[in-house]
Image 1: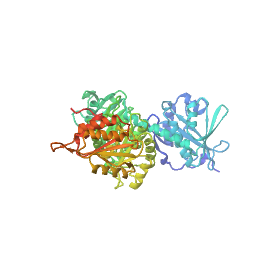
Image 2: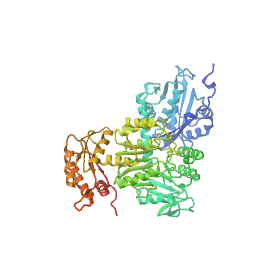
Image 3: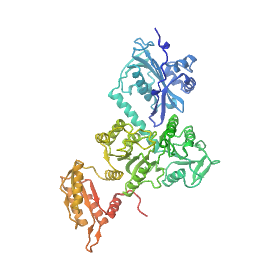
Image 4: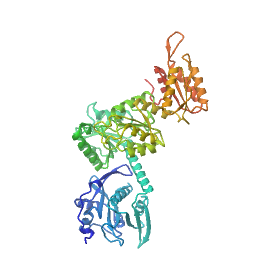
Length: 626
């Protein structure tokens, strides 16, 4: 009969490899430990404190013997499994299990219990590394037929006891021989799944927060001459009033210099101060060098504007995969590549790390797009309507950070009241639906989806297109409480409405205006959307602003009305000319709304540009015209 140590090794299980986002927003790579990791393991152990070693082995254990190293690096991937969390290719934590029998002795299947033990480098404790490793090794154990974990922990090791008790698994606890013995049933429970999702939400939200609220930014690839992508972003950061430290990096510089008054250096290494976010605006072939420079000097996140990746075919796709692997190896997250950039209008940040020359005014709308061109159109449309943004993210190819990550952040962001998403593909419909449902319960989520009929995403997107029918996607969004619109214009309209108007108490809609035809169109549109419109009230084409004011005041005070649609067309003046009276009409409508119960009022107009401008100015957060 074979003992566990005699069992042949199984093929390397590469499907156990995974990138994880940690509690502080950084990333780590989890993978199986192999025989080639001996030196890494020794180096890792040397950096662990004596106290942590004592907690792991219950005795002073200053160094690993050759036998220990062999044992901890040779696994059969069935009865003996070891996983490591790595950053920059080096171990920051390890976990292993050994299958045991009822007497606690080494065993093989069908024994379904295993002893588990962790060791986390002191510098990385508190980042949620052990919790992430427990999730992964529990999944591995279930795959290998193990149903329970047993762990012995010294009572003084409160952090590790908390990792086990907070995991949400059904467990038993006992105390014997000076140690706490914990037994965890690995069958997922509602609580363990909730714990995992909560950990995921906090980690992904924090990772996005780190990208949007940097204390320092370096623009890598800022040219010495004005113009070009890098120099443009540098200028936009300056003009936007970024509150943190700003640096320019250009490898052609002979030494420290200045560009647009910004300290400039040949490399990130030469800066000599911490850099939180790097914006890469260099050719694709130079990006790996720039990523290594950033990663080796502690940069926490990247916005990659550079093109030349998966949007250019097979070779570009492999270049994109390599970019993600390289960045993740240093614990960095990426927006991009081929991104338009990010904007955060918060007063304490004022970040315009994008190609948008005029950042939006501060507001309560969060905007995410998968397309730079659509992002430009949406920014322009919101600006014209006087709507302000809390943040803007244009993710380009979405090789790493996606709309799901952004939803995790906006769910708990106190500065965002409305979420607008332009999506060209939904890579993980189940997760997106779950996140959208939770977010939509707290704040409105509005989506416009491109590629409805082609069923494909633009070239370059790392997330594959959803291969489910358009009607099914619509149903999923509706069930999640998401507001689905058909065009970017409607996305702007919905965003402005939701950000500036109260929510209706019910489906009853009053319609009034000076055009019977427009009133009937509004009536039909309300019925199509499942609302309950009241009979349209025609004020006639001779209606004055005062007539509109009186009509709106009456409708708003009507207890059978939950919202009002006002329709307006130009009218014929006494001299026979066409008048719109935009300013006066806007004043009249605002006056009525200000003195009535809080109900949403929507104005639909035809060929009345002055009215649109006046209404936008009334609630605008945009700067006044020069």
